[in-house]
Image 1 (cartoon, one colour):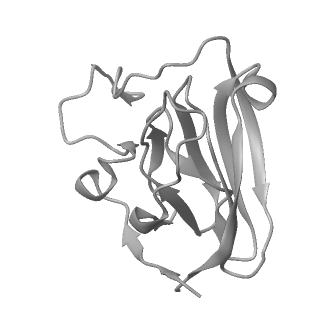
Image 2 (cartoon, helix red, strand yellow):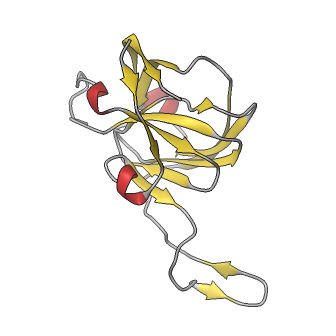
Image 3 (cartoon, helix red, strand yellow):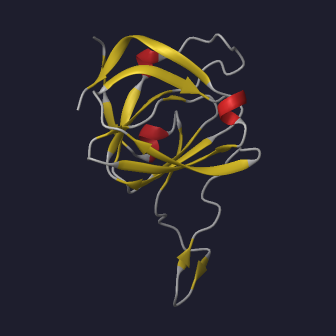
Length: 162
């Protein structure tokens, strides 16, 4: 069984897949006695956005499916727990039969301190929880699941080495 490496979620490591959302080191857009606020950290491309909730279930660290959305970016913000999030970089978004670049796949350790914005076409699957529970806020388009969800089987499955 092929194995997938695990990487720490840093700006450099995540660049091929998108951008990360983390506490900035710049001056806040607004700062007062009640809050520090940083606006416009990254752009998202989502028509008719909606916020959803995702609860991932404990299972074997074996990737047997993967999906992509070629029309929009997807935002994943961890709310609880630690997980491993498998991804492969976007390639040939215009080709509906494009091969999944599984040789370039990695799993990112998401410890709850950072969120992500995936580029259009980034291949991914539901995170694998390391803790008993892992939950996420997800931003997608209203029609994404029906109209922009390219799901593929991964055969043979890839083992995520944790």
